[in-house]
Length: 79
Image (cartoon, rainbow, N blue to C red; front, side, top):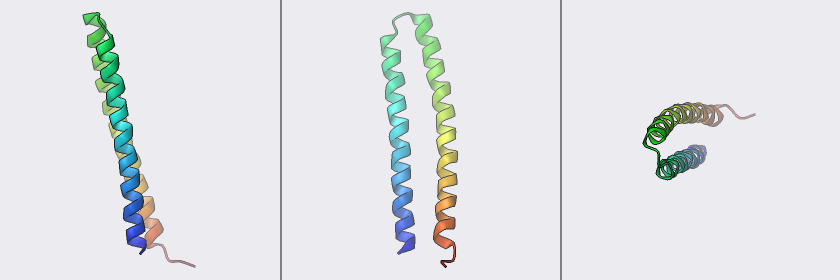
């Protein structure tokens, strides 16, 4: 039972993290389309890539830490 609960929580967290990533991508795609100056557009695109890379790394770390915490929660002896 606890393993199933852990898997459900993990799936919900992963889904939320994917949604955040997708929303971020859409935001920067919209920003890129709204920019008409080629020079500004290029720097905006680079900033979006850098932000996306940083956000992706952070979300992976958060996901790993949450997964560890959930595993500890399900494997800890109950009182």
